Image (cartoon, rainbow, N blue to C red; front, side, top):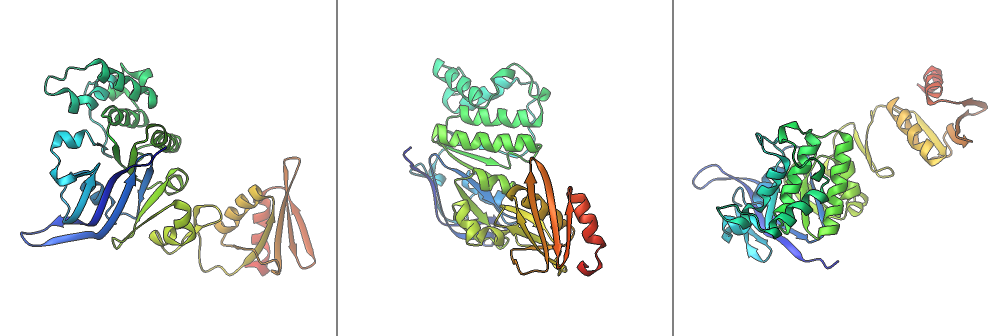
Length: 342
């Protein structure tokens, strides 16, 4: 797949005009690139400026300074109809589409090409059919929008954006109103669409763990407006990912790619080893009970977890004491009862 630069931003400053000569700068000196076939996730804490950046890149609000180039043309110079043929936007607001059917709403994606009469050509109809097949919305094409679940509605809005057939798709919190299975499905769908259609897809999201798995690149906005970009694994390993979300009692575990809740007051260290999947869940349980899991084999408290014919066994050792447990619940109960561990 040949990558082509679709969107670039150079020395970009974003924010709001507060007066005739005064601006409120949210972020500045931004240099960004987005290529075809890429799924890029924009992440950051609340208030960092993600929505402001998305609105600026989509042309909904002007940039304070700098330049945005979309498919070789300055964003500020594009007429609305030309912009609609290059960029499609899916917003986070819940969809109020009245009595429109799914097919009717998706067909609106062809508006930039059908002029004011709205007459669909065979080519338009093929685009609409393809976009509904790609998003698995064809099966409820004749249902009314107000009859759909939130997950189904989000897929329909994505189908409309695909029917618009632009090189760039921007999505602002596309998983905001979805349950976990639908959030996973939406991220998987966007990842596959970027690959299959060679479109550039940029979405803002709070789904940190899903973004780490699905995104080709991350744009990390810090609370102070600073923005760092890169491949997810690089940003994790160099500490940028954790730094963007650093908070007391909130720790990013590089070994698992997940955030954990921990209390820094605990001083009880336990060496944990054994079956990798069992170690993962045991570690989570121990951390919840304020124990600190360590890789130091010299510690006096040790837990080895093994799996014999799908029957987990936890072996606890402390000097000459050695006990076996068959559930994490029993292990935790005993650990809490040992005074020397407190």
